[in-house]
Length: 71
Image (cartoon, rainbow, N blue to C red; front, side, top):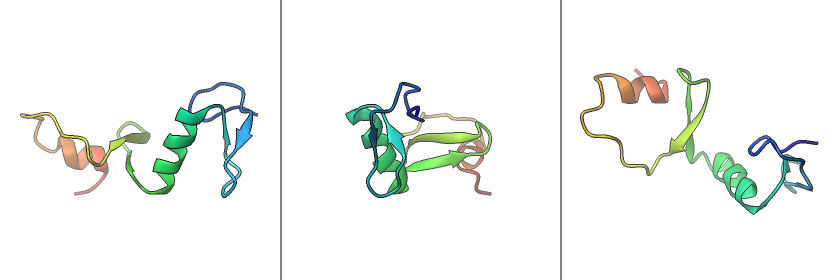
């Protein structure tokens, strides 16, 4: 199987979800996703930066809401 994070061949599986992963870094990201530490972006159709990330100053109006999919 293939690691959904890296695209590399997956040698391991998460013991709780059976999600395949290739290395320690990919496992860390999988765990962060399980802890809801990434936000889903409907604009990008994928998960984006951790919630703790400091956002860019002077971002366009509505960018944050669009990024997080909230009004």
